[in-house]
Image (cartoon, rainbow, N blue to C red; front, top):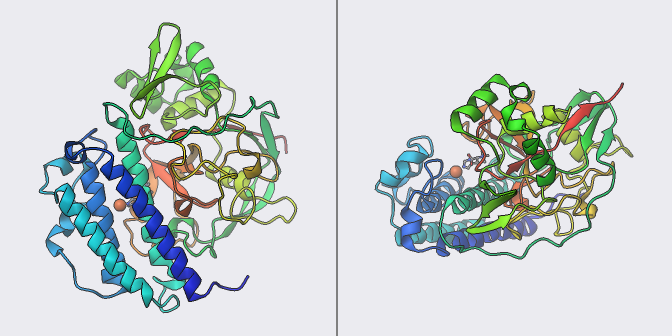
Length: 436
Ligand code: AVJ
Ligand code: FE
């Protein structure tokens, strides 16, 4: 396909930034001021920090780096540098109050709209195909997911609502899919808005394996709980066992037992845990223990991506499980259209050619892999996006959740977190090796 011309890139950049801002605005106006400046969990920033940080990153990259403008408020840079202060200490900083934070982010956006009018999309690597604009739209959407996590941690009456996903008949197709062995192209060199850690495309050999057709459901996870999964050391890594014992963990985050049934709190509403929905809010240790209990294991990151992108008809890799088309509502549960995962077996139109479902959207899926650079990786445009996080401390999650916007979700997109984290919208599916 011919490269899109400047007007198409400009429209795409503006639409992505505008969509992100609409979500940011909703997430920061649906509660009163005290809820914007409060810390709802030591794991999270106050919402008003995310808001001004979104504006500050946009100013740094689009006004200063791309357009060469002077800093608007150099004195606030340190406050909104994620590496200068931990999330726990942010509420005690002299942050911009909500009205000022809003005005600052809006002023930055006004100026960015001007910059976009005359932007050159082929001048530098930073602006090539609108990369910097795409990076900043993704950054804002990533913080919109972070802010939704803060909303989930917040206690009090509900302030966010969304329609539930379409109900579907109980999924009765095959429980797992065989992915053939052989070479596979992982990562990308051509996707214009792919971030540095997704690059470059490279070949990997993969042994044949079976992977779950859908994410693991609450019903399946409850069977692990009822079978005493949290009381049997043999299913857990030594670190996982120490962690769940030390913290008294015996179910996913936000779950509690009421007599014989499990309830969970979800954006201020308590409900019976829906059996056919993918399990949510489990840490890597829980996902790993469940997989062993089931006689299986977590997929590696390479296996996950092969399941999501391999096209057996051509031997090549596609952008998404369903092909190269951008995500549409019939493909996947993305973009906070719904505030929960869709039942297992939803979105047949989003299945991979081999028949694996819901790889994109619904829940982030833990993989067995550490977050490491691909061969030929180069940090771009800044080391603090991914390079400083490479190593054995972080596990990779793939596929995106219901809270991720399509602009920040691809077959190649990589997320990462500590193995103890479970306030994130995390679930998993399992795999097993196939006979060669
Ligand atoms: C890629 C989701 C791990 O939220 O820490 C936001 C994204 N980087 N601002 C994070 C990010 C800088 C990042 N994750
Ligand atoms: Fe950030």
